[in-house]
Amino acid sequence: MSEPADITAMTFETALSELEQIVAKLESGQAPLEDSIRMYERGAALKAHCEARLAAARLRVEKIVMGAGAPGVEPAEFS
Image 1: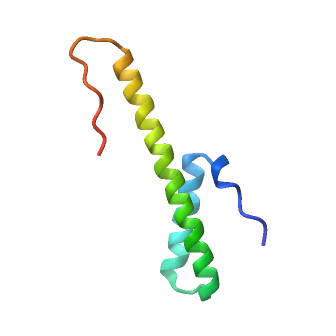
Image 2 (image 1 turned 30 degrees about the horizontal axis):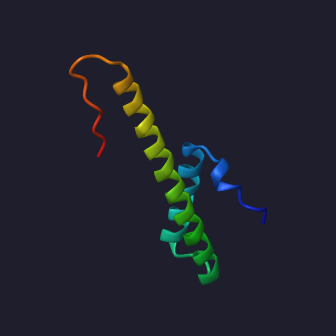
C-alpha cells in the first residue's frame, strides 16, 4: 500500500473525494478493525481540512463583497 497523500497539500475537491471513498468503505463494514480505525482517523483529518478550506473560501468571498464598496452591500451569509 502506498503512503497516503499529504492532506495539507490537497485541494478541497481531492480531499472531499477521498473522504467520500473512506465513508463508503467504512459504511460497507468490510474492513478489518485496525484498517477501519486508520481510515476513520484519516477521514477526520480530511473533514477538518475540508472545513478549513470552506472557511477560507467564505472569508475570501466576504472580503470581495465588502471590498466592492457598494453602498448597502452586506457580507454574504453562508450556513
